[in-house]
Amino acid sequence: MASEARIPPYVIAPDPGADGLTRAVEGTDHTGARVEIAVVEERPLTIYLNSQEIVTAMTIGDYPHYLAVGFLENQGMLRPEDEITGIDFDEELETVVVRTASQTTYEEKVKKKTRTSGCAVGTVFGDMMEGLEGLTLPEAEVRTSWLYALARQINTTPSLYLEAGAIHGTVLCAEDRPLVYMEDVGRHNAVDKIAGWMRLEGETARDKILYTTGRLTSEMVIKCALMGIPVLASRSGFTAWGVEIARQVGLTCIGRMRGQRFVCLSGEERLVRDVDPASVPEESRRSGRKGAA
Amino acid sequence: MASEARIPPYVIAPDPGADGLTRAVEGTDHTGARVEIAVVEERPLTIYLNSQEIVTAMTIGDYPHYLAVGFLENQGMLRPEDEITGIDFDEELETVVVRTASQTTYEEKVKKKTRTSGCAVGTVFGDMMEGLEGLTLPEAEVRTSWLYALARQINTTPSLYLEAGAIHGTVLCAEDRPLVYMEDVGRHNAVDKIAGWMRLEGETARDKILYTTGRLTSEMVIKCALMGIPVLASRSGFTAWGVEIARQVGLTCIGRMRGQRFVCLSGEERLVRDVDPASVPEESRRSGRKGAA
Image 1 (cartoon, chains in turn cyan, purple):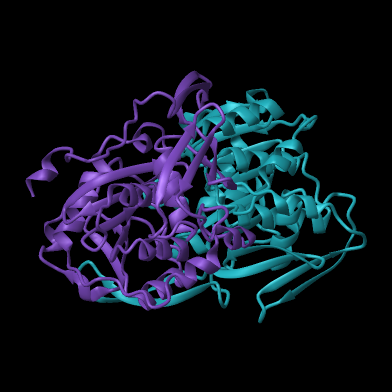
Image 2 (cartoon, one colour):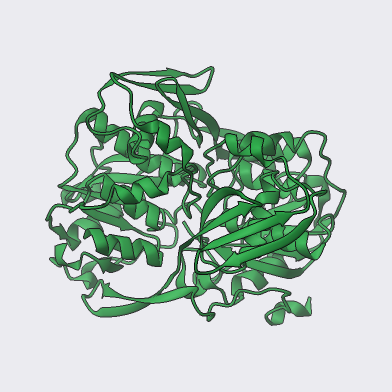
């Protein structure tokens, strides 16, 4: 696991220094001293599917193409068979338009609306649930040594979170290698950017692990399952319905990953315990993301 | 500040032991041992305004009356002048119907939709912003001794968070006294329950402080301002737009409250620094809520 010693070679890693993702804001601290802190940006992005306005997302603004495609796909508005003919992002208008060769089934979708426990306003929950019917996630193994290696690498990777806080992260991983690390003010945006990247890059899901700083709520579990990823891991906790759905679809759900500790509440059969937890160092207080609140 | 020594006399405090808020779920821990952990419930609640279905919220399920009224009010669908004639909660159907004497202006509202960085699916963002025009928040003082006292009391109050994690909390406070402490899987649900309680109990806003475990995003700031509460405090961080809006409406915004530390990025003029931060104990690692992720 030599990769743990350094920052791994991500396909996409956070770019905390990038223009427009954070802003320096002046204030005072507890001593009354003037301070200037880096604060994450939060801007609207209106997503269109062809001529239909679908939703306005609040986002840090990076990877609008991936966010739009991933959101539409995770909402079931963009089907695997829908051919994407273009994606037009207009920074000034704060819009992104995803164009498909033929009409999609989104009309019926936009009528429905569900408020979730997560951060995905406008989620078409009913349709997401329908999408789970008959879904079986691939067999796969997940070694505990991978989970520990992933957590250590992700927690120490320079990120907007470590720079400015108040942001969620989701990382697409293969075995012990983090591949694509997305962050956003809404944790579901980060997941959607991953989904968009996978769709546009034609990446396979069956051999992947999805790591999130967010809670394992029903919606996070559903999104992971719809993406076809068999393993979902988080340093945060669970909701009862999230666990229930994970068990229904056979998703391996691992939460509360802190140092050597974790809890697996679903899909235990994929776990290969190939390392003695006692050999894993506990986290220092500073180390690692606590996840945005 | 004798109240710090014990759990304060809340008007409404969390009831972690209440039936139906958590569920014992079996799994395995990092050592492979069987464990049973308490996990928060997450269930749908469909909110109606008269005969119009508005949204389905994912909630832990307590205080559906407050959640429904607060959500509708924070969305601008329920105006101060709208007379509430009845609130019918049907546990089996998982619905709550808020009835008003006369028709409301919600029809136009339900056409719009914004996905926010927070957890409020179905937020009518445009209308929330409109609601801020011409809004001036009352003058008020907030003593740093109150902020420290509130944080200590809230962080040590028995809660679903301390019991099961994966949940957000929002507390309505007066000076150094926490009054109403709401928790929910979606942090905006917790805020909406506070708003609903204030509306139905006729509580004043101008002398209150709103404390949240969640981030100070644009939507959290807007909700607090619309509720007429002049001070918003959080142990979590900020977003740039949240700060911008807070400054526009003159909301005092205090974040990153940890032990003796905090940062004030807006409304500094209300702060009365009546205690030496050095006299405030740092948090132990265990103490206090980290906020759900």
